Image (cartoon, rainbow, N blue to C red):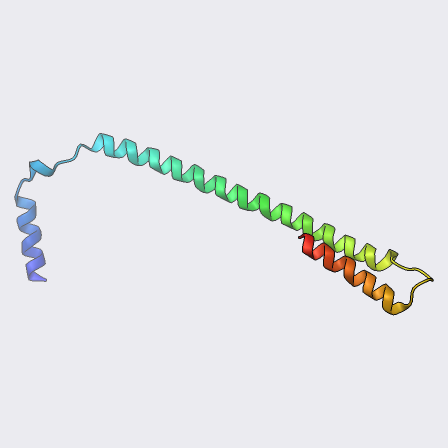
Length: 98
């Protein structure tokens, strides 16, 4: 700890002009990078939100379609086992589409 304090004291007393950096370009580039990263972050969040809305709409439509398949696929010509097979086949085809 003493060595760190001595080094800090020595470092402050020695003038190092050969590594001085002008702050104006650094601050301008830093501000530009901050705006760029901020806009990219906002844009990526908007894309994620849009994808979430679209996926939610697909899920809702799929549920509605499944309910319709379950309700409307009925026929007196086929047995209950065949009707169940037709419904299952339609639902599996829809899942494959997703």
